[in-house]
Length: 112
Image (cartoon, rainbow, N blue to C red; front, top):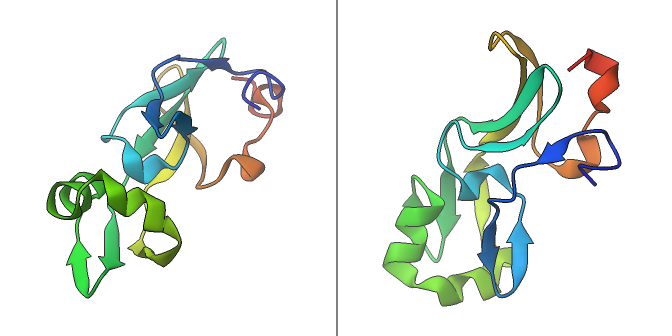
């Protein structure tokens, strides 16, 4: 998907159950997912997840408490607050943000 939209994937995705995770909540702030000629896509923000009667402030906290098996029950995670993928230019000037790859803009749209 990143290649189709003109971005160069960083090859550092989190892998769970042999699948690359693309939800920004699974990544630390400022993790660079992809680059363009003059821009970046990176994770930024805060997470709050309601799962099994508890509220967690990060995916890491949830998995530390409940174990990696909780990923199999992902459908029952309720995101109260989500991180976003942020696109900035080479000077880190904000261009736009999105939470899912179906909203990923073409690199050339923003001259990145």
